[in-house]
Length: 236
Image (cartoon, rainbow, N blue to C red; front, side):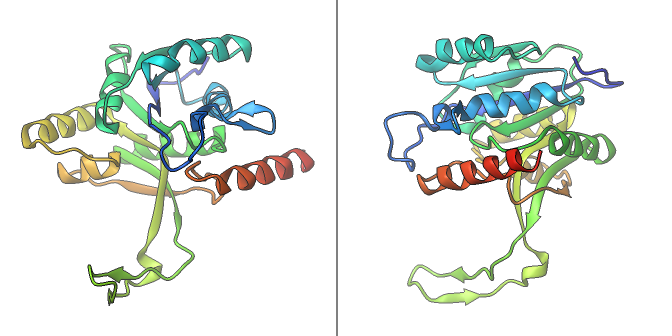
């Protein structure tokens, strides 16, 4: 169990429909070198000293399987499995509802980012404790183009100022709850938690993550994840 001067609650969002994966098996259950993707995510949070306890938010039909994995793979921290909503924002809210009253920070993570490490999670949490809001991110490698509806390039942003945001994204409790309330009043729905708090006027600090913290989105990502896992195993 984590021993912190603050209480940080992990929220692992795994309630998506996996439409871009084009497979019958939900992407969070896909085996990566023999271990389900969601289990690898849970193991990272389990090993992270900054995280006190965790909620896994998933679809109702997947809840029993999640609970089985938690027992089967001997996850030590307290894990609450709760039903998600129709949108990411609703699913995060479901996770927040499961947080203990003493929670001071929320660490929100995509269940489909199974290669995150405990050290990377710690880094994001420490950043949020310092700045109020912190998220893992990496500098963009490619030149990015802004394209109009006709397919023609409108502009080319300066690459040095562009970062690809990852998860976990970590927020001070009152900051995040206030942002949620504002979004609800405005009828706004965000797919990125940093964007949610940004629209409420808060500043988010980015901390350098790793390019290996990829998100399982398409079938090609499975091979990449397994190659990274094999490389990690070979360097132990």
